[in-house]
Amino acid sequence: MPTEISWRPHVTVSGLHAAEASARRAVFADSRLAEAIRVPASQLAAEISAAHLPQARFWQHLIPLAGTRDHRRGFVETAVAKTAGRGPQFEQVVSGITAHVAALDVTVKAALPELANELSLRERPLREQWEARGPGLLTQIGCLTEESLIVPQCEALLVYPALGGGGEAHLAYNSARIEAVLANPVPELPEVVRLAWLIAQLQLDLPIYSESIHAERLPHIAKYAMLPAALAAAECVELVRFTPALVSSAISAWRLAIPSGFDASGLVMDWWQTYQQARPPWRVGLEALNEMFG
Image (cartoon, rainbow, N blue to C red; front, side, top):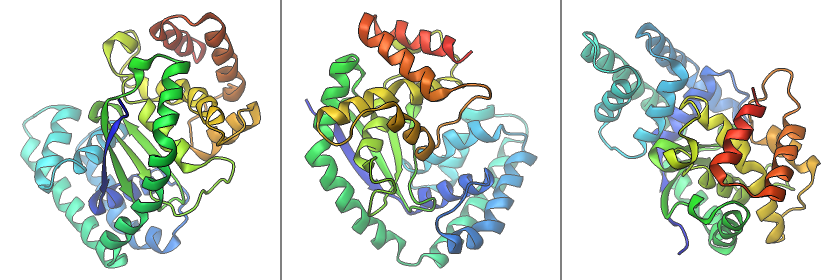
């Protein structure tokens, strides 16, 4: 059965997506938005730091939770609890962060007053591409790895393209966040392939696949593990030509973190070729990739 996708264009998630990018000092494609959110984004980041919350882990909960709950305080409360538990300052921390999330929301809506309508319009081209090629892509990824890796259903959180193309797989929440661009930022890498790559990561947090990999390390390993599978699948459906150069291009365009001293492209290609030749259980292959990254 094809993966059932719930498409969710989301204004609040768009703002949080941009704020998290601002906190990382990412380069924005939309300088107007970057300047508009600079102050509320920095204030939100400062509030997170003042609460002694691990920034990266907190964002990993906050952004996908915002896509599943309409009540602002509710998703902030859950994100804080999942990140650090319910300590003596819990209510104070939740109130402070909620206020800054609200301020960010107001700023984004003022800077992009038609964002809700725009996101709905931006959904159409990506969704049409997905309906034409997405099911075939996921089928091929399952054939190249294991069919059970493909999720039966998930959410696609569509956000404003603050970076000109970007996305993240939220393994714990069975959702994929993707910037709803109107054209492929990199012509040789269609955005529908990026979305397939994100969705293909969502089962990797199941213990049967990743029990031996630290939870905070898993998202990094998942990105690299599904990269060659997604590109090879895209070649099968005649969307790309799968080459080492394309792997390097995807690592750069899709902003995968490269550990210092590693030739990430060469490493993942060596791993993929070995996996395809031996075809061990996916769990074994994933563990091997984890060890190769040191």
